[in-house]
Length: 158
Image (cartoon, rainbow, N blue to C red; front, top):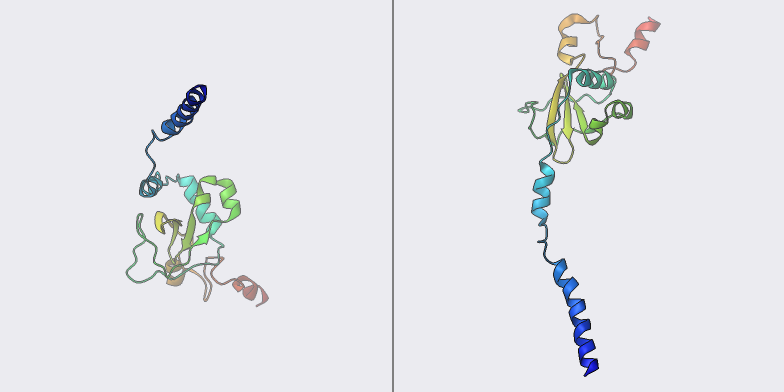
């Protein structure tokens, strides 16, 4: 009789914690994805925008803007464009940019969320290609230090 009583008590003690654990409903994967997408929008001050312009002016990754692509917040970046990681010195100055990539186009710098390839900020380039080709630079030169790497060296020799 004692064995039956002890066995019943042990069974009850084991069943109570197991039942208590299942009181919370499980989280569905779709709910996690929806929650992850609800990131607050990137708010950049004018000073942060200038830091981005300055840091990316020498990046040798300018790409031609694809036809039918309009650089605006919320747009998906076409797969033809390559996303580049933010430079480490810029991330050190502005840690909020760590989770973003960038695309350097002819006239704009795009800050892109790499998780879904969505544009989160559009910043005009410091030295847009359009401006440089309108005759504002001496023959064959551009104002963009990153546009033709050794141009400055060529003109120093002449």
